[in-house]
Image (tube, rainbow, N blue to C red):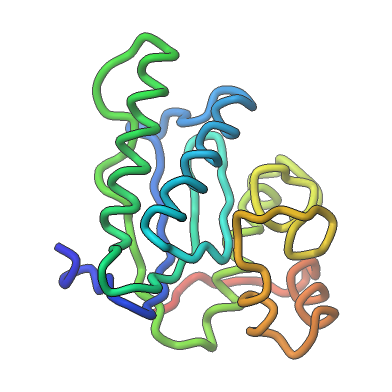
Length: 185
């Protein structure tokens, strides 16, 4: 499974999934917070570097890097999904699947696309017309990247390295006239 999904050391991946039947996977703020706590726990356990994340009511996106040979992204996402599903089902007295199949993954090999993936992920709440600006959404790391909050879940320093400067990154991410066409290899 790992080999077919290209999960190995020093690889970058855009991971995403949504609720089964497009249903919500987060019903209230506590659900988002619980998921973020689980995300932190499994990130540390499996030594996965989280560069960007965005949680929406019925789906999520991560841009991650696998940093060891021994701890795979597949174990990370499996444990995260299973753990959160069990908690969600217990809270809402449900059973069965929460997510639409296994997490989707795009292996990104060309660093040229990194900044575009970052923008694409962070613009999800804006495109859904939930907020006016990427930094208005509480459940992404946009505020951390833009130095509006001191979050520690994501590796902002690595993200900064993809841009010429903090200011160029900020301008690129917040400029709504720069359109993302998510058709990356």
